Amino acid sequence: MRKVLLPAVLFALAAGAAQAQNVHVNPTNGFIAQAVKVPAGSETLYVSGITPDPVAGAPAATPFGDTKTQVISILTKIQGIMKAQGYELSDSVMMRVLLVGDPAKGGGMDFAGMMEGYNQFYGPLKNKPARITSQVAALVRPGMFAEIEVQAAKAPAK
Image (cartoon, rainbow, N blue to C red; front, side, top):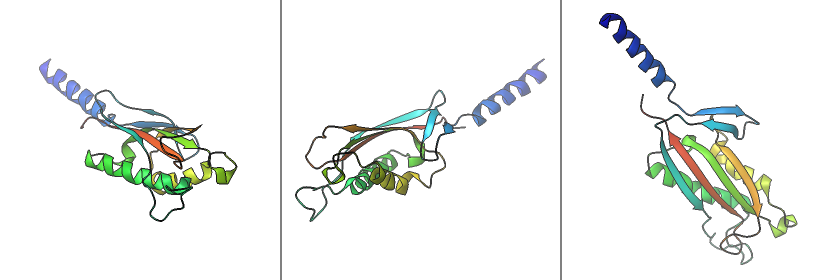
């Protein structure tokens, strides 16, 4: 009985360990995942809403640059925060993007500019996070057009 039970238990453990990874469900358009399944026991990281740094020499009306510039600034900061904690952008499972309407774009959010910045970081990655993008009335400082929050997860070691 022992000779049969031990291999069966080891096989079950190996099969379970092989499945211990984030599963990105139904990539809807190649830019985001429709859903991400995180296995039990995963380590998680919650990156607070990050805003852009001011751009040296920028006009007073846009001290942080346009939406694309702001998203690049934010994702650079997020990437640094994640790396400092032992995570990669590919560990991202959920992202929330808040955009303020850009007066230069008729008051609507600059989704195209956001995507240009986003794709510089997440475009090359196989696994994209699930994501929501919303337009909001304002952020904490005038001229800020973007704020991004990320949740990341690392599956248990195999």
